[in-house]
Length: 364
Ligand code: SF4
Image (cartoon, rainbow, N blue to C red; front, side, top):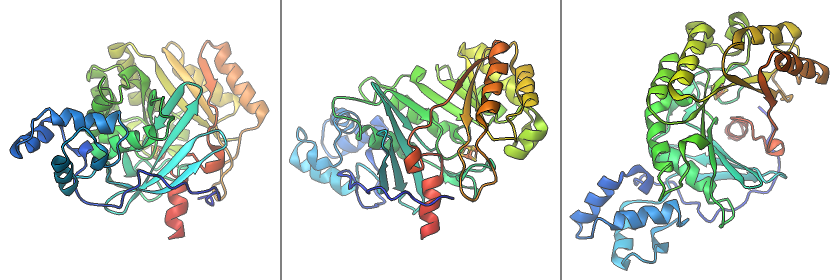
């Protein structure tokens, strides 16, 4: 999609060759405990091992200095700490980090660390590719290959956490990378539950945002899950005709069903829903679009995040004119709708979804 920016590739001390052994992130505490017991080790060692990877930043079993040497050897022979290798590591001038990870079966996925003051946010992928086909997105160009496993979801979080200063930790998760998160909901919920553990990464549900183009049944399931996750619906258009063009899966669902499910999410969890809107110059940013959006969201407890498009070589979309964007924002604000323009982070390293993966796979 775009050429890879020639920033230095940083060697990562945690990089390991691709292996097919299970990782500690693939093992539940019970399974790891049983494995230990079967070899004559106390099950409580499982807690120590998990602590080393979740909070101790260990990238090999050899570093786990309070484990007996024999156990460290046995662990190394049976498992690995990480399963993906770091293919690229880019750092932007605003200290946004982007990792291109290669899975054990040869796929590439992206994840991003966004840093602002005390806030360290991990943006993770949930699938290899994406089946939603949003017309402006590089991730969906070749469809979806497979869901990421619980271990692969957690590994992205831990690898990004390991890039924060040692006296810091991840504070937020946004599930907005490659893939449709709700199409991999079971694995995602399991990984987020582990990420939320106090003795682990300790990222509570209220600090997690799950994004979706809108799978109504899955939105309802997420609402009933009983956790205070924040839901972001990627709307991108104020009517079905335009949305069918921009988000092709809308033809099957329609906006009415999606908004009804989002309302249910709000009624069930009490959490305000955010509507994401990529602003494409002349396409969805005109006064009539703003008025239609007001008509859709009026009376709903909603917040709108506007994401002005930045020109990308090869794609027929344009950055919105400043005057159009300002007019759009004013129309929403005058109608009492909460709206923000999302700051663009990491723009010098192609931090937008799927662009680096596309550049690398096109190189090969
Ligand atoms: S924007 Fe998100 S949902 Fe749409 S194709 Fe890209 S990854 Fe999939």
